[in-house]
Length: 126
Image (spheres, rainbow, N blue to C red):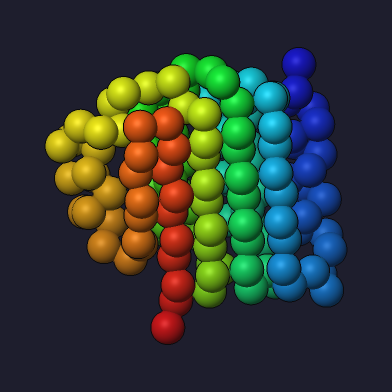
């Protein structure tokens, strides 16, 4: 249902060549794994953006694998010198697991903060 809107947003961002700072906040919109990958692809195609802040807040269960794939793509392949990803109201206790922390530590180029219902990722390119 949201796929068309998410796809249009992802494509539109690449066409705004003077855009340097982007702040996107999604509240109470349930994104599928497919929609998250569309967003990740759109974000990684935005070579002109210097700082991206993306906030996703929804009372839904997002699998750790789906969210980790999004974070992995953004941390490894996004061209942004500054990146802020914030996911809140997560209904998954998996974030407190040693496995989640290990996967995030393996990325190496990010700082993160995990709480019971949220995750905050920051990337700064020097």
